[in-house]
Length: 87
Ligand SMILES: [Zn+2]
Image (cartoon, rainbow, N blue to C red; front, side, top):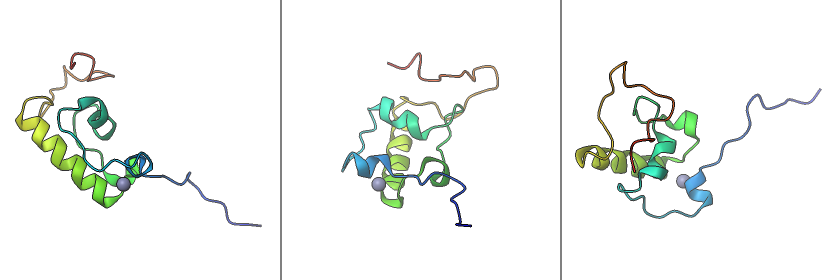
């Protein structure tokens, strides 16, 4: 019997879209790499390549410093879609 992959092979969606630069002001694209508690998602979950993960991490940290993305979220504030009030 042939070996089957347990999980679907993941692709870096930034490579697929040929993104060369990730803008920290573009919270809509950063949200794909943030958990509902605004933590940066690990590469093993998002499937991003190392190059893009580093760009995302830098962009998120920049966005945090610019108060576009909060650093921490208390238990009460956790919602299913944290980007509802960020426009
Ligand atoms: Zn990539």
